[in-house]
Image 1 (spheres, one colour):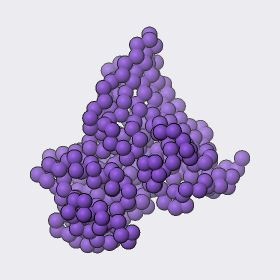
Image 2 (tube, one colour):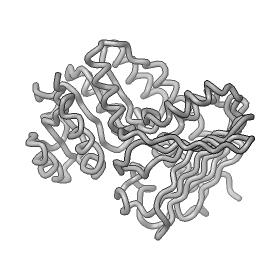
Image 3 (cartoon, helix red, strand yellow):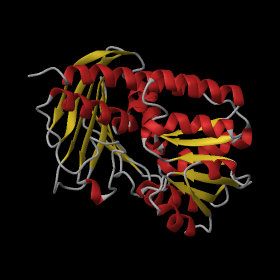
Amino acid sequence: MTHRVGVIGAGPGLAALHLPTLARLGDLFAVVHVSDAGSGRAAALAARTGARWSTGTEQLLADPDVDVVAICTPPEHHAPEILAAIAAGKRAIFCEKPVATNVADAEQVFDACRAAGVALIVGTHHYYDPAWGRARHHLAATGGPVVSISVTLALPPNGRYHDVVTEMSEPFAMRIAPDLARPEVAAGVVRALLTGLAIHDLPLVRDLAPRFEGVSFARALAPIGFAVGFVASGIPVQFTTVMLPGGVDALWRVTVTTTRDRLDVAFPPAFVHAGSAGVRVQTADGRDTTYDRDPDDGYVAEWRALAELIDSGLPVEYEELLDDVRYTVGLADEAASFAGVPA
């Protein structure tokens, strides 16, 4: 069965990411309507699939041909747009991360989804990447307890892959470096990057260390980035992210160290369709294993997961999705407080 998709938001992410992904899944999905917020981009993007286009959300949500809504707008719009889609009677929703920027809004969203029986997938594509399943299987099979987790992102200028790769709103998604000497700006950068960028990998971290305990350190990094350390389930976790003008190609790596080995998961740059992440395992006795990459990536996998939810009628793990929000918001709020303290 082909599910008919209406996309709210016509930014570069739709052009570079979701339209190519859905084109690979033509047996499952067809884009039939695209709306923008007045930018005028929807018309050109809709033409790529022969879809209709409109401005705002009213016409799209009233379109009887749309049964699946994809929300690809800035984070602060996600919760109200999900609620509007539910009120319009749509049966399934794909929402870019995060679902909401605070816990109260997230609780309202998931309560509404549960009451209406709406299938919901959140676009945290690293979690859906086949490589993460492979890595998780290795960790479970070897049984070595996790002793540390680190996530390292070195991103080239946004324009190399996407004009707004962090999907943040003003004032932090800007091409000039923010004044990190101002505590409120440093705090805002750290919170925005954690909720808009680190959220790619926080569900993976929560998979291994589900109980957030507290932040150890947090600071904003010039020109735009952050370094945050925290403890979860007794495990030290470190996130380091920096966007460097004129920098090298992206590095996006999750490293998990156990008492037995070190496991590296290297993800392709965002908005690049290059198959799954790479997984490498180095053991204490000198063995070095690199797993083959899967031709499918997390972008394809998350949309397939939505199709499976719709077609099977299986229950959505709303509480798990809500726990992801609680984890992220708790970390982001505490880290912002650390980063906002004057030096």
